[in-house]
Length: 188
Image (cartoon, rainbow, N blue to C red):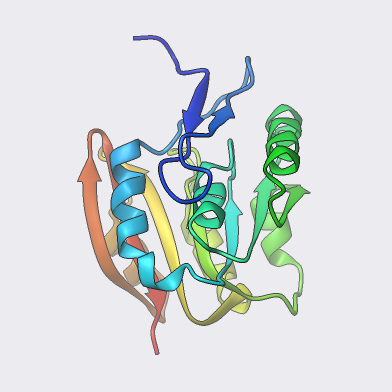
């Protein structure tokens, strides 16, 4: 089976809309089944939420959240082709969103007055997540939830990632195909 040229939004006001995957880019979109489970988990937290989509790629997670009632999304992506496609889709949809052209760790290292209710972390599977998770707390609103996606074969189990960063709790996790994913929150 070949690589898909687009991914669809699976729920909300933009259900069925396609998000293009520009040729020559390296993305691994979150499977529909994992996104459906994730957004079922987040149903009560979406209305009016501010979202931060790190390693945004196509923007599928942040745009899905906006489609289902989130107020705003910031997308951090360093590939200019993915940024251009994302900006075009945001404009087409009239989405309340910002695209940040930078490396995730560089963005998170900056001081901020901005906080987010939902954070999506779906990096290239070989990337280490401990530094990203350690930098994240100043960006989190009280009760914020963090989605993390990894390969089933990745060395860093979700439980181990959470245990390595004080103050985080793994509240849900599941698997779909070759992907395992979980929902984490800042301990209250």
